[in-house]
Amino acid sequence: MAIINPNKLINDIGVDKLNLNADKYYQNININSISSKPFSLPDAQHLFAEVSHLISGLSVLPEDNILDFGCGVGWLSRFIFSMGCNVHGIDVSQTAISRAKSLSSGWIKYFTNNCGVTSKLSYEHFDGHKIDFESNYFDHIVILDAFHHVPNQENILAEFYRVLKPGGKIGFCEPGPSHSESSSAQLEMSLHNVLENDIDINKIWEKSKKVGFTKIELFLSPLIGKLVSIDDYLNFPSNHETSSNYLSEIKWRSVNYPIFFLSKAGRKLSDSRRSDNLCAEITLEKFKSSYVCKSNENLFLNLIAVNKGSSVWLPSGSTNGSVNIGIVVTEKNKKTRNYRASLSETKILPDDHVKSTFEIPKLHNGVYQIEINLVSEYVCWFSESGCESINFELHVL
Image (cartoon, rainbow, N blue to C red; front, side, top):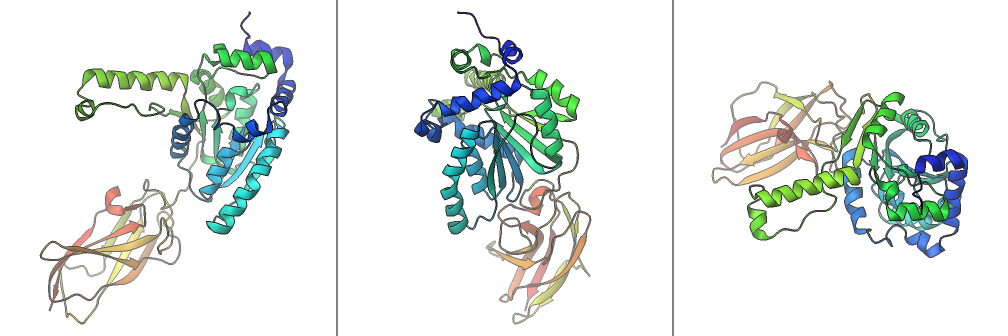
């Protein structure tokens, strides 16, 4: 039996007919099979690792606008929506889109009513040519096992570039450069006349540069971890055989199941829910290396903080990413206590500064070491990003 060439299939059938065949593919699948796909597939356990790599590589944050391209029945869209993102799924199959809407209605209701999710989840049919959103709309685009079905890749890459915000990324998880020759791909193309193309990273990058993308990055990791003995674990990476096998697995996975990211030039303004790009310069007015106060008094201080990074600092509070003044009190016996004070009730943009009056809580008689820094709640202390702390001694009489 002759090997089906995907490029010949594109030339013989054409873009629109291939997209119609994709819908017929969904129409001919049992409704329960559609609903359970992809978790009913033999390699479904890999999906969790793939999604983890995609989401972490894109640095997805709540309230981001995400395009799920080739969403199928919408399982990935529902997952990202649950993280608080505004997700828009598109697919050339109207059958898949209809099923995605049906499966998602209860999901949306549950997370909206019980989990405080206020983001949006929607699905739309894609005509295979133009993405029906305005330019610079999406923070990120996620594509899981879908781009190798696209017959007009350069045109779609241009559409991705158009709808992506400056500084945004596309995350791909796709089969490799020999996918079309696999038995499963040949079977799908012969039975359903659907496209099972190869994904060659170099060719994708050449097409991407033509439409404006400025950077490509690949995730170097085996898809799933390798189980080793306790001895091999303790001797890693000095154990040559274990290290060599691990590197071989990384190389094989990176070629045959690449996870890669395209970036659009520009600055995407992130916020303090992420640790990268957090940088501050903090000073105390009339700073002294030693302070004295009475045990029944609060010590009031004025802190000036300058946002030296490229992230927006969220207002002070107790939610994820809120930026507060962190106060670490160390007693003579080395016991430490942490306190918080409000820095600002409004967002602090890069290069802006804020002045805040705060207090050291009342302490018993003794000598204490005080450390002052900023903290992004549930993310990190700014000292972990290189921000120098303010340290002084406090004598309580």
